[in-house]
Length: 86
Image (tube, rainbow, N blue to C red):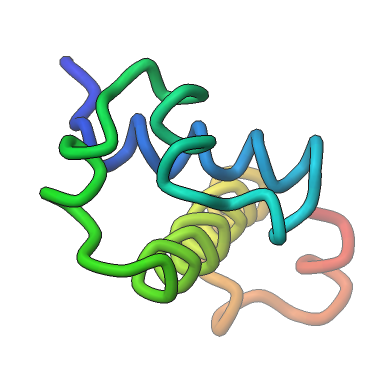
């Protein structure tokens, strides 16, 4: 399955944040990291604030998916010990 440009952008932005911190998130820096144009980013995210919020949600969704994979159930259904173990 082909990765969407939005996911590609958010993965690249997350790498940038991990490497250089959230202050490094600019359209130019994220575009370079994602291998896209600044215009390509602006198509998906109208502002830096929208991009930063989307990065946060993307990472939270990834964390939740990893937890479900490890625990075999959503966090709301897992016990504290199961969540910790996952």
